[in-house]
Length: 564
Ligand code: ATP
Ligand code: MG
Image (cartoon, rainbow, N blue to C red; front, side, top):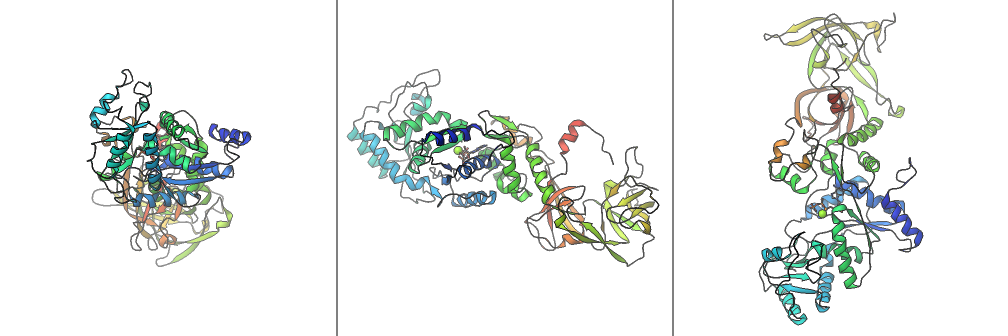
């Protein structure tokens, strides 16, 4: 159960428990996740998914998946499929078939007629602009439409003709007759139906009038017998209207509870902004590993377990806030540390020749796959005369705290031998291109019989056995911690982190990485967690860096010097 450590449950679960105790819904628990299929799911949706599906699981209930698909102009069957895939990947199962608000269009239409008949709805022939102006503002009361007092017969006739396609888009709307002087703007005769001569991705051209989201959502929950309709805070206001419709129609009443949406530092979550990043070509797609979408996180190498653990840790509150992306990364590292096999890989190679190692010889050394998991066993890595090490692991003129390789210095090559740097080879420009070294055959396995110590251990890859790969390093999408606050009229994409993607070619991986499948995850020792990208081909493996081993940003903040 949620929040076990503290022994308490969040306020939404508390409500469910209270309702179960009082028998409000006869102990039934029916939740739903209601996405609009107009984009891909993101980490914010994951919070809602974990909450809705989680509650259903924990209290012996069920969770529906319903596409809230009332807008024919933006929705697409591809999004419908992607949403299902993503929920499935996160590890949740919805109850029964996928449901669609658009399947309720007939019922909603009948309900609209019912409200007209009851004198609770009318057809307004004002323009959208006139309607907008008539609605007033927070400080100014609304004014009644000149069409507000149409008779029931006239309204029924006009609505039937709207439905029959006799009017153009925007010529008429159906409005609820509530109160133009309500202090709640949403109650000032909200629009129920509008005309849209557009094809719906599921309903085809059956309809040219479409219900507004607000006239659909509450009733859809009611139709499905949802007990706990859980949504984000911005719908608190709409609740008043949902309740009005449901009351006037005299139908089953679900209980709505609002919680704070998730905001994350260094990224944006608005579908509109994500769409722009994709459409403007600033991202390679919805699954760009820098995107906060489930697709992006997945391709980046995130595990569903890490995302679920993150959602568990952030909990559910009533207060909007922005969560540090570092927490998400922390949950990811925790999970990957437990499950990833270790490998050696050199991203920026520097050649090393072991002068006293026989040419053409090769030996197999044993390396541990995962120190966190003994059952992961060992593998063998080939050691040869020519090797690669990380360029960063050598300095010709090392500062005081640099303990890695330097001229005349001995270090440990992981799982292999002690190696001493004897000489440095440079090209014409003075750049170091090769190190001439010797090894101590007595130190096989990484310790010296005479007990002498070395101050550092570095990773390496056999040059002749190396697998060459492309490696993509990712960093935060925005340098700014709260890019969501950049005003809409500003050129917000200017704030993208120019270093969010660094592509490295010619990286050298240990032999065992020659055969991998898309999505396989590894820890490259000392470098971070990586996974195989779906751009990979057999002769061109591509790895994504999922996350570094430690929070680099925390390090930057502390301004600590880089130690060996
Ligand atoms: P739009 O701006 O298109 O309305 P949306 O983010 O609200 O986008 P929906 O498809 O309507 O997207 O969202 C489905 C569900 O996910 C809703 O119940 C919504 O409250 C929830 N949700 C969306 N974004 C977040 C978020 N950042 N944190 C928590 N829940 C979210
Ligand atoms: Mg929405």
